[in-house]
Structures are given as structure tokens and as C-alpha cells.
Image (cartoon, rainbow, N blue to C red; front, side, top):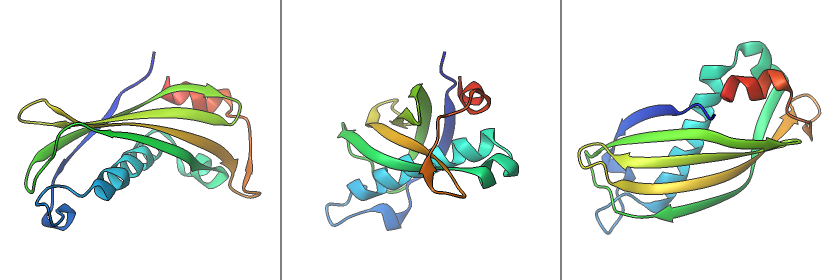
Length: 130
């Protein structure tokens, strides 16, 4: 069973585009930000100095717009692991209406930080997230 990690943000003015809603690029940034927060929350400095993740691809669906000062809840979880790869899901929800704003699926590759080469995800890591 995947462990859900959650964070909230208030949409800043800097996230708004010329159409007066959150720019699509900001959602991608928030998808990456929550993944980093989740990694840092679950690991210690030793593991963070030993390993690093890189993105292989993102798939994002935009369901509804968000606007300046909206409170958004960002949820993320790891769906599965295989070798050096994992699939992370992210959901961005409007806190007041409970509408799903964005869903995303990201494929990540696990690397040795020293060699910057893929390594199989060890049980000590996968156990932290499931």
C-alpha cells in the first residue's frame, strides 16, 4: 500500500499567467517540489548524500484552472518500483471545492550520487515509501 504525502500552498501572484490563472509550468514545478519534499521527509542526510533521483518523463492532465490566492492541496505517492525506476503520482486539489485541478504521473530513475549511474532501488528505500 502506497503512503500518501501531502502539502498545501496558497497560489502566489507570481504563478499567474496572462490568462489570469495558474500557468501550466507552475504545476510541473509543484509536482517536482512535492516529490523533493517527500524524499527529504522520508530520508536522512546519509541517504540523500548517497542517492539522487532524475526525471525520465512527466504525464500531466489539467482538469480545472486555479487562481491567485487559491489554497491547493498537493498529494503524492509512489505507485511501484522496478529496478532503478519508480512511478510517482501527484494530485493537486482545490482545498475549498475539493475539485481535482491537476493529476500527474512521473517516471523517476534512481542514481548513485557519486557516479551518477542508475542503481537498483534497495529495500531500505522502497520500504520507506510503501
